Length: 445
Image (tube, rainbow, N blue to C red; front, side, top):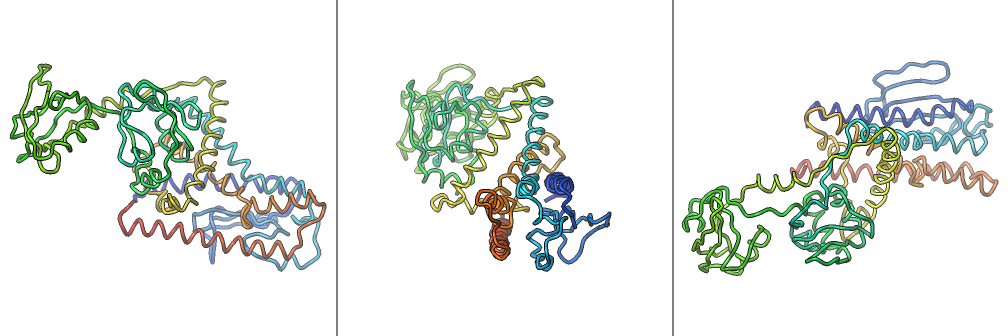
């Protein structure tokens, strides 16, 4: 972890938390509800800075994991219920009409949503969108063992995920983990298969969420191991293997299983050396290997061929920003399918602040920074809308109940629900921080 990574994380959180809380603060002021505190970050025991202006104490806490607006007459995470024992006052939250309280509680997530939309629209206009086009994988994909367990095969060309066109590799790698079925072009035919959850679990277990498939590349030799069969047989750096015992082999994913069938056997390799075909006699070792490393730059060049950049006009960037926002929100909702799935054990992959900071670039990258901020803004909006007491969503549910039934939820019920919510959230934080600490200790970050 570097200071630059920490700086980017704190700056992003400061923007998001500040604007989220402003989303509660402004409507509260408009409806003349008294705001007692407006804090960036939490301030248990003490604060870094504070100043009281009018009825509101503005401050900066020392714990950068959120922030809060304390509104008079509202049961919140502070669990300050003394004020609630007195008769309701006109400036208190509880004395306001239900529709006003609903707007106050929805203000934070609304700001988060529109902030993400604005950022994504701006990025699409100023930077365009660079991605790897699945349609440009001319030779199909090369798939890891875990990816094959999901149902993919070497040489597949990805067409659709859950019936929707799959254009971008970057989103396809994630979307397939949440999908029910995938459609590919396989041996010239469209094939649709269900995604195997055991394969998803294996992908997650191996931390392959972004690398379980990639472009196929020809087998071009780079380094030769000193005591390997390749060197003993006369293979040279730059040779390209195109066949084994007369059988066409164009890619490494074809070569490896072919060699495994000839352990401790002599074979004839068809190769191309300086664009000239030759045959080389070699003996495969007991592990089914020849003792060489392939030229990774070839695979990288194949990967670069699939990269495209799409530019947007101002009028095109605005709806595109909304689409990106909704896509990210949809993906985050789907992630709960994995997080709470006992088979995939996705909860073990959940990262807290330490894990998030580790993901930040070690040099300031503003495009990444704003993309991360937009994504995290949507994440905060989604989390806060979960109907758990202690979060905005919990307050929204109780307020909607009052609007529908015409009767407010009893104060004691609100207090008990808030306490349960706080305990639940604290337990969740323990799990998240525990994951972070365990990964740090075991070096899995």
